Image 1 (cartoon, rainbow, N blue to C red):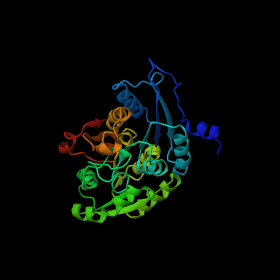
Image 2: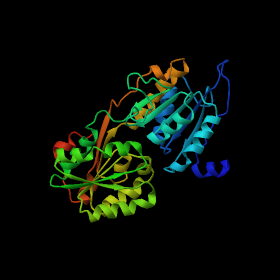
Image 3: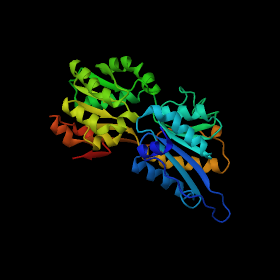
Image 4: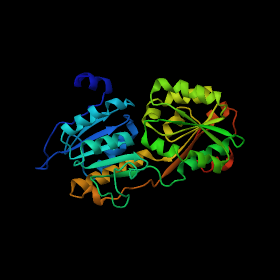
Length: 322
């Protein structure tokens, strides 16, 4: 695929003109994200502005988005490396691993990587020991169990819950290995269904249906974010109570989400950009973990599914969509 065709497909190149302000060199940042989500883009730009970096004045940004087409990652990484950025920002494990492997000497700030130690992006969270640092999504080993527990509060009689995973996501594979024990502790059978491409989603839900599940837990992933309306339509078509990682899926009509505030991650990334541009080394900047989690509940969806959300859960919700 030629560069022009790729950019038309992704709508991903947004480059500010290079300028010099009062003798200050324009700094260059490459961004490789899964999807172009306006709220996250604005959070990132806002975080940069808090530290004096403004696009078209002293900052130039190249954006690339995979849009869940993982086969494009090597080409997009190569384009960002050719841009000669001071720093590369990535979101998601696949993107972070690809950038780190291709350009290990370029400072890397990753966002929304559940376990960067397991992926060898860093040696430890307090002391990265590599040219990468950033923001991890999972706080502890019980996070997925917490999501499932919240889901089970809405459907307490359920005995079988489907878990939708992307087998190409290394974090999904890691978490999947622990699901048997998680299910045992919660007293439910967890049925794994897989999809790595949009055209595999229908088959995954058909498999879940034949397994007579009453609810579905959807692991967070670029595939999920990019295809959220379709996935939400499927969980509701099959009358499944659903738990997502991302708030957007609840806005789209899913039942619940519980996860870190992704906008907060992108805003806080501006802090690390500033530190690195001022001379700090990623190896000395600890990987930060979530400081804010959001529980979002869609009451309209609950009513359509014939479910009653317990008041004890509603009072804990950060946002209730009616």
